[in-house]
Image 1 (cartoon, helix red, strand yellow):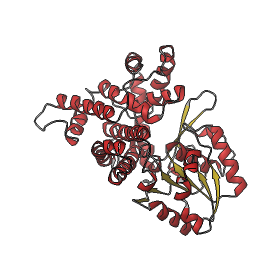
Image 2 (spheres, helix red, strand yellow):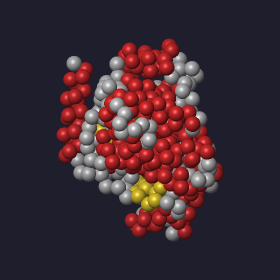
Image 3 (cartoon, helix red, strand yellow):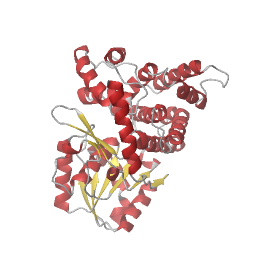
Image 4 (cartoon, helix red, strand yellow):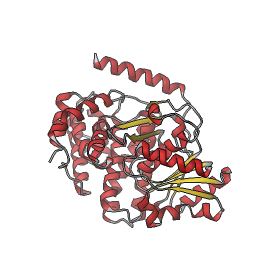
Length: 397
């Protein structure tokens, strides 16, 4: 019965998605592209802009560098730099207060996925008195959203290319996913200058986040749009450049490649959504504060093992793509080779196999939430209690 309900839900989502207009993407790429985006914002007519970021980026001067062209054009800026990892509805409310007091006409997010997600819901709340909690789900933001732009300073979440935002309850820490076409940024800048020197552990975790997006889009049951092309391109770029980006933060080629990979992976999941890895990883972030990319990296190989029979062909294709096998190898051998390649890449960039933050006493709670969340994703195999418990045990130190 659970499988039947899942198939019916995904079929309904496909129908609804088919009725929606195709997403429109605008992106400026390369060194100095943040300046190009700022000039685009000026040309759009916005004269009062709220900048949403986090305090470390502001203190480092990166956020101010990103908006230099807005300052030069004498655009009136207001700042909300209170975003923290796994942003909460309280942070959204604080940002909205700043926006309304300033009379902002547009929102510019600068930072990682937390800042971009928070900015999306701030922009949505600007013209509404509804509680953003009521928007959890798909298509519940039905009013006009304030113009929104994004400059990612990490290469992982792909939030600059998606119509979703993840916001946490400040008390329960449970994560709510708000999704709708109006939350897709109007334009973004992939400026490698703003990612140079990003700490290795953040580069590694966000890179594995992007890999998870690409792989989950590739193995999902929903064949839609360009998800295959964009996810393949992202996987290849990540395997070719993530290790270099981690070992040498000033490697411009690697930084640009990873920014592009994260964007491609974002486009892929924007068309088909994520999967079982995220269903578990979201709970690890909500319960223990484990950074999202790190949580995905812990879970990814185990979920691929869990659904290997269902997606053997796709995993075999990815193995050949990254050079983890030969065309003459059996699909089962290639599938295992790709999973092993993921494990090896994770190890090379310094991410552990287990976390000491997990507690066995929480397994039932985490399992319930993960099993419920996966039912809304086009996964090849639904999580079940037994195997989810095994995965949790396998990633617990």
